[in-house]
Amino acid sequence: MNRGRLAAATARLFLFQGSMNHERLQGLGMAVAIEPLLRDLEGGPAGKAYHEAIGRAAGFFNTHPYMAGLAVGAVAKAEHVGVPSQQVDRLRMALKGPLGSLGDRMIWEGVLPAAAAIGLSLATMTNPFIAVGAFLLLFNAPHVLLRWWGLRAGWRLGTDVAEALSHPVLQAGLKISGPMAALAIGFAIPVVAEWLTTGLDPTARWGTAAVGLSTAIATRWLVPTLGAARLGILVLAATLALGWLL
Amino acid sequence: MEFTTVGGLLLWGAVVGLDLATIAQVMIARPLVAGVVAGWIIGDVQAGLIVGAILELFALEVLPFGAARYPDYGLGAVAAAATAGGAPGVFGIGIGVAVGLLIAYLGEVAIQLVRQRTAADVVSCRKVIDSGDFRVIYRLHLRGILRDAARAIALTGLGLLLAAAVRIAMPVSVRGAVLLGAVAMGVGLGTTLVSGTMIARDARGGLVWLAAGLLAGVAWVVVR
Image 1 (cartoon, rainbow over the protein chains, first blue to last red):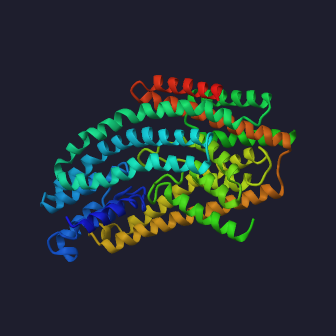
Image 2 (cartoon, chains in turn purple, brown):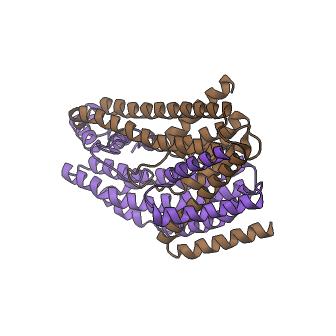
Image 3 (tube, rainbow over the protein chains, first blue to last red):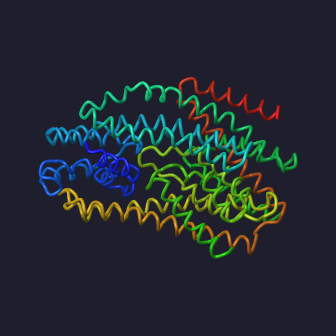
């Protein structure tokens, strides 16, 4: 495959969720990302094969956005080697779940909370811009690498793309990212708590701790579906009313 | 607030809002990042850092699986920094976080509206999309991005209006503001404790790692 087209498809992966919607979820994003890789199909962009492949790519699709490159590359390769259309559809559908599950566990439950907690801890110790820079670097090094590698691995393996999921680096990332996140969050809680409450008098500090424990009990057992933002709005509205009275 | 500051915040809000899911997702939409940069734009990095850090504690709860809906804490952090910026001590922190949470929640609602509208576009062009007309697909995709940018700018604007209203008529006394700040910090920390436990529970040996982290954190606080 032409390097320029792979680069164009890689760049478009960063827009994968641009038209996220309740009808086809990431379907249009898939079509936009895969399009540069389909221009070489028989007849070119004006040909029947190109239009049929684009139409198929724009169907319902949903997976982890960072892992989508594997699906884009594999589906594009399948279209190029003349895999029957029903099999291409099955490949696309079969990839959604495993790629989504892998990305969710490794990125959303691992790399992201780990990097965010490290960023928070650093914010208490150093210049805020260094903390922010470290967070962005820690998170985006694996993120960008995953998008770049995923597309190329998908293109190389085609319908055998499942092999890529057993790549040792991916498996190692899956194993260590969760424990790393737990460790980093654990470290951040007391460090950030101490940093935030430094200017408060002892009564306010104990009050903060009591609110923290009450919130933990509420969000874990009493109103787990409410969500932190809604709970925060309710509690702060009530406090605002109390503060106004004070 | 000067015109250039307002313009800078609106532009930053657009970038932050788009980064949440639509473009790149390089996590400049995280409240820590959004808050610090918003604080820098208004000339009070410290205020942006503190409200950003508190909202980051809330945001650790978010696991954006599939097409899940979740608050837009990045836009919330921009509004929170604009509210808290320039206020002495902890005076603006609690009210800033309150404004930030409100904008974050409205951001969540607005994302659903944007996605519904894009879905309606897709339904109306279903046959053309299925025929593989890439120009139409590309146009719909671009429209989705522009719609989300409009959402982000509108919510940032609303956040700035709320910030201005709070600055003009601060609705609490000094004691009330301190109380509000302490409560905001407490809710954020409590949320993080639960989020950390949930994440740790799903990881192999995660609860042990969480406990080890807590001990190391406490040791760090004591030693420092």
